[in-house]
Amino acid sequence: MTKSQALLDFNLGYIVTAFLAVVFLALGALVMHGSGEHFSDSGAQFANQLINLYSQVMGGESRYLIGIVAFLCIFSTTVTVIDGYSRTLDMGWRLLTRPTSFDKSSDQGLTVIMLAVSTLGLLLILFFKGALLPLLEFVMILAFMTTVVFAWLNYRLMISKQLPEADRYGIKMKLLSWFGLSYLLIFAVLFIYWYLAVKV
Image (cartoon, rainbow, N blue to C red):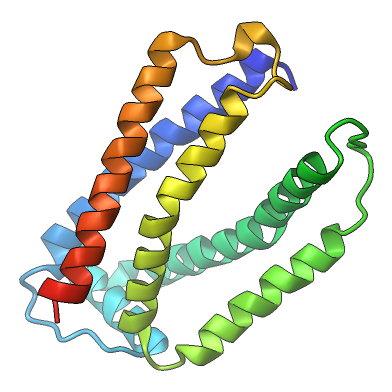
């Protein structure tokens, strides 16, 4: 894959993801908020409530279509996490441990990582069985708090000597990166304070 192809793939995925985030936010605000529905902590019951709400808005004949779309969203996300995330972890680990002798064709360890990711996911589901809202809260906190770590790793990658000098961050991008890291860190600290001191 060339640099231009990678940039196109990244930018397209970023734009589509941002657009879908706005769409789902709007759907939640317009359909779920103010509906008077008390949402269940059970994943299966919550899915049924969600399908019922959208079928009421879009018509009863759309019930099966909404169910199929919901299933495909869950299924595609599962495949993406097990396959794509495992491959990313495997490649990242090999780059960290053997940066000078990296073999792209080697699949050693990928199966182990896939099994580990699948097992961890299954354990999370079993641990939060019948408790959807605590699971969503846990995932939200985990995603929010690890953002700073991933941003720092991305910054280190973009200033690494393993990158061609022409592709590394310049002064302006370094300053922007530090501004972004500071922003994320401050909000992470504020979130921890709110969650531990204010919320309780």
